[in-house]
Image 1 (cartoon, one colour):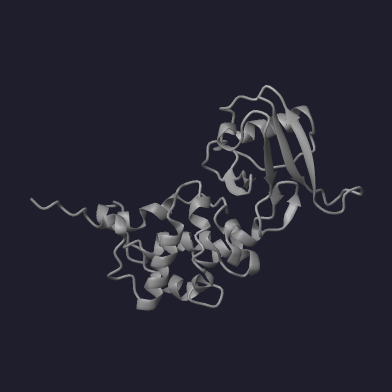
Image 2: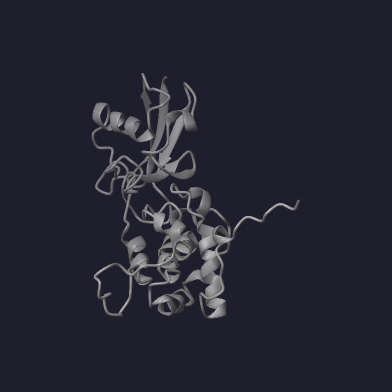
Length: 256
């Protein structure tokens, strides 16, 4: 396959280009099953060594290579060429939105991680460690309530797809709420109310307008909008008690 790439470039040290611009590359002998990240590597290694983008594990775990591919936030290491283009077609790549661009496809993640830190993304339990030295156990049903949100890899794909975040960078964003959800609904944690108080403030969860961009943007298939809705409901009730995650409801038996 021959594939054209249209890449959004930006170098703050360039004297030729003061603003971001588009640059096109053509790559031959591309396999339909090649990942977009692999082809970007070929462009960097074979055509333009100055092309800059983040990557690490190349396995969809670290989340470092989130970028906009043909207008959608994706992980370049997970998307196959055949998923986005046919032979002779064009793949358009640009940095995720809402965060300052440092160079080419690399954005400044510090504002994103600052919001992440705001929601206390760590386990809080001040009870003595169990005498037998074992973990603080919980039932599989209690675990299932927040199991989905433990899958977040902090790639920022959901937050960078959110119009509310684009409009107001002070909004904590979907990823931070997902991380808070993971601990708010953990039956072993003791700081749920503190997190709910944080997310109940001006730039917390109520800035979500339920546009649903975040859920399809998540490469881990987390039900982001549902998690946000559960946090909103917990704030309204003043407690997580009685909020039943849909996945924990047994399927109804058929009538005979």
